[in-house]
Image (cartoon, rainbow over the protein chains, first blue to last red):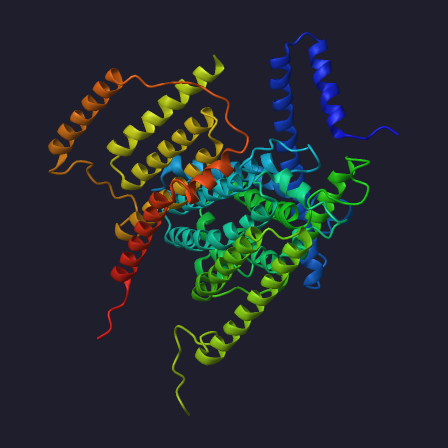
Length: 397
Length: 164
């Protein structure tokens, strides 16, 4: 049986371009433009499907039906919403900083689309397998937070500005434990190439997945991903009850749609990164015989992660801002520092693979359990978790 | 050829942003121009095939430094559309110093012959950088981190609440 490889299709396309009279260089350029267009279209289609999916899921969790009027199961609802957003009036508030105001939504989407370039959908099916993949993702995440800051400032609105402040505080703080959580798989794989990390997890029929080796790191990644994706319980950036809507309060019509799109696709990218770094990416049974199966495995794992994020968003209440900050700086960062140090030492010992994995697993469990125990002790002692910043005085009758 | 066109476009963008960062009357705009300059420099690194340096540039300069600068501006000024002059009483002094600096650099570049010997980038460039940090260049690396630690402690000392 021939190998069903998506690469073959790409090579056939390349050959076709050369046959119709392009030079090899020009054909490669057309290849790249074509690949970029596929990624871009996938971005839009995925976004529409995921928005429907999450609304439906949240509806079920909260004992509602969710969208069910337009099309079968309400599937056309996101398209109807998009058409509605198209027809809305595009308002720029007076006193807004026009250029910055218009640039911010574009940059927000740009930062997410760029992250698509390094996500390995299957073996060799990746925009570009650069050798700094993981840091590249961090770089574009930081451009994303910059765009939200620009939106908050340029809107000439106090609530938007407060939302901007919260963006900086939250996203920059949670970037630190997230960077550690992303670096530990890199440390184990010995490469920052996304595909390299996936390949490294293919050993021992799925036991090599990083989620089995470093479960604590996976949990920390999940937590920080919730914060980076501005999702409940970390959705303080757009807390309706506190700051109306946050940085996007003044945006209407399509510009708001861009932010909405960026928000949803950010969650998808975070799920895809979790799949790549911890769930073995495109690895699965028979993937070496039929490489195209990798896309299916990758998408299934990513959707499972997405469901997890949507589930958490639908069920958890919002944290208070001081709780959020202390949780990051007093819990996640120290835990990750200790884990990073221990993992680096274990890897330097030069033991056989299985022993290294077991030692890392042990260190994960011990450190995380110890940290949780300390956290519990601290909470019991200080009771800060239940203390209000402002305690209203209730007159005694 | 294509590389040269890209280089010229990026160079013009970077220089334009740098000038904008100096002359912008709005402090927030100046900071945004600074971000543009950083991004332009990152593209230069990409053109030189130094990918790690490029992404580090974006992470450190745009992700951390520029965001902190903007945050500081937002916290310390009344930020809603206040325009401040970009010159103060030190303007002439700075102008002379910059002119001297440019002259020195031009003289330096015309005198020193740089040994340009393009070689293919090694595959394990990142591993080599990492090893360099903890072997040959461990002292500069540690000194830099101690300096950052001092800055951190200083910031905490400045910002802490004073108890009686």
